[in-house]
Amino acid sequence: MSRHLVRKWLGTRESYNSLKNSPFLDAWTLYYVRNADGTTTEYFGSNLVTVPTGQLLPVNDILEEEPQVQDINPYDRFLVGKDGEGYKVIEYTLNNDYELVKEEMDFDWRYGVRVKSQGLKNYVYFDGKLKSYDDVECGEF
Image (cartoon, rainbow, N blue to C red):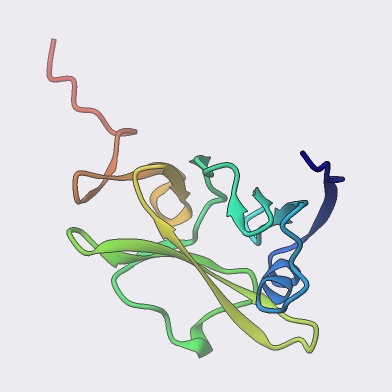
């Protein structure tokens, strides 16, 4: 039986993706990857260790189509999609050359997100529909 030294690495999603697309990704390294939304994802080599769940950073609005480039500012976030077809969280960031870069993340049953234009109500995508349980009609008493 051989022994291996496990190394740890911490970096951004962009750095990890460049390593992953090169021959330098080490199968015996534990990679901690910082995502644009502030979460951390763990990989052992190229294998995902944890499945991210929970509350995401708030988005500005819910849209059916991506906004026009002239209508957005750096670090704007949107929930884009339709019921039955699915949703994505899209964030616009700046790269090292100060150019606007779009980053996408699938939005499914594992996540919840608050929407600023809806008074920061929490939304989840469940059973093919985007729902908020912050408004519950309890009837009259």
